[in-house]
Length: 110
Image (cartoon, rainbow, N blue to C red; front, side, top):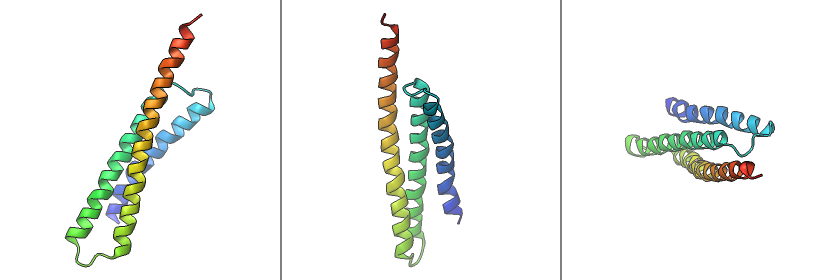
């Protein structure tokens, strides 16, 4: 239960950042450095969550006698999900940052 609480906490913080990002996009603030930072922060939260799930897998396999396969499988799925989320957020952050740079250059052109 403590492992689940530790693993879900970064996802809650991730959700808060996602809400802010989608709210900004809804208000027309699409390609901004602020959104790139939000995506980068979301990537950090997802990466920390991936580390937590990986740690729980290692602790569960090494520290427990006869850990059920379903528990290891569930933890592994959670790890793969948040690891993928980390990569997606990092890529989107880079894309948003590049788009914000291009947008600011275009705004300066008369």
